[in-house]
Length: 87
Image (tube, rainbow, N blue to C red; front, side, top):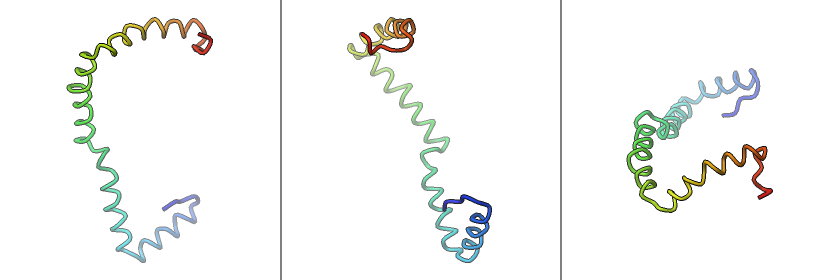
């Protein structure tokens, strides 16, 4: 439900009071949609990045070359006012 004004909010509340099944369906939908933001899910994502993806990147030769170039390029970008398009 989109609410733009206090009057919209009052009408939405009245509509939900008149339709408890819709209210419960919205609660269930909120639970489903919030799952990717749970502490458990976010913790698992960080663990995957820290313990699987980063070690894989460290073994990748292309990434190692890029990593060593990244700092000089960032310094050059800073010297040129952030614009590397002139290179």
